[in-house]
Image (cartoon, rainbow, N blue to C red; front, side, top):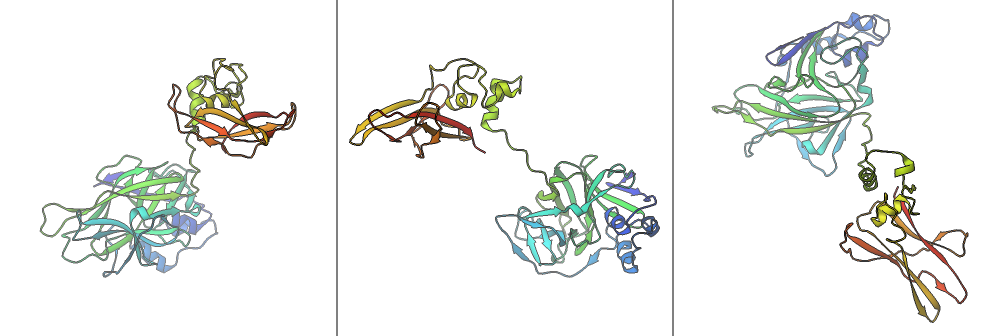
Length: 414
């Protein structure tokens, strides 16, 4: 492996046997036919494939497909479009009326549409995953996983290339370059082209980013390469395009432009710690024992569960009940008898709690919700934080000699 003018050139031969020729050639690149068909399974490439792949060897400009200007219809939407297959290009577009004049977009060759970087997610499906058949610097070691969008088209993966098509003539004085300037994700990113047993690397985040992490692109051309990721997850890959302008001392440039890749399976994001979890960590930084910090625990033995202490803003490490935070009852006399109002003051920012009033007709009886929503007062500042009063109005009439028990239940929202 060596770096020459910003590129890493690697020559490798896949050892025998390899179980599936098609899987081998499309994932790692254009290895020799014998290397990938030695097991008797799979089939060698047809002559058309040999001609196609051979045209992509070398310095990365020879073998480009040239074409005239294309007319593209732009699209933009609020929700990013997930592109899972089809012919796509990361296109360098020139706009004479913009500063800077170059723009990086995704061109959908099948739908003849263009997408701004923020309007699209490029999906590397699970069929793009392979295990390296040998130690393969810089991609990884034998047996390690690699997710690849190959330079040969596959029906269930994006066929992603680079394009400088559709730009006016007389603007550029030489070839363009797309440079890797930033990457955020769970693994490393690589871009390379492969031929028959040869590999040429253009971008490699494993050894850091420098001006050599670039892909050359002739004006009016387009080309394909292998896009590799060492782990599944979400990547944000940032590119910058530049090229010499006719009669200009400084190059034409784009803004750094970030494209999102979903390398599947994308793990579920870790949930942010809830307010109750942060409250637990603040009061008990040295333990995770659920008998101490759990929502139903009562480590200060004051008869008030941690979840109630959390709602009321009381100290779970100091026995302060029943001195503070008790619910209150107000009786209202009317023609139908006595009506009961039950209230309690809780911290206003406890949005992760469900607070409900329960009642029971007698001691030892079943508890059930009263079925009425509380009135909520305006927040009132206090030493523990702003508090609101929850007040359940007229929840049940009491007749002479009757009795009803009430309690407030606190639960974390699911």
